[in-house]
Image 1: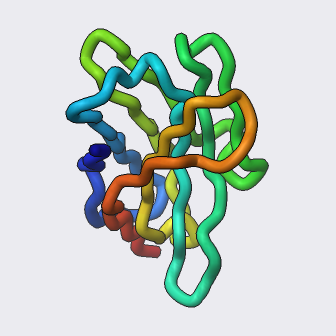
Image 2: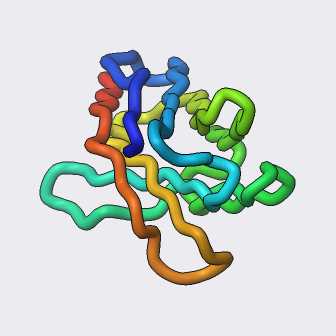
Length: 117
């Protein structure tokens, strides 16, 4: 089970750090990702991190502003979000998959991030 936390309301230009903790699973067995869904829009990919954290990949819209990381000892994945923009407003979800490619199999319930202008 994946549980996100750290969302909230922030002004444009501000920062937030999201956390995703796994219970009942060993996070190091999974590639972890962050996705987001804004009102009226489809869910979109934000970032992913490899099993040991050595490789990361970002959507173009967040490159240079967001950083994904993981602490396998704490069974937690993070998304540090800096220089936030109103268009970053969305529900953010963490997700897990076992394989290097393919669909993410497990999802959290989401945490709301709202960026005011």
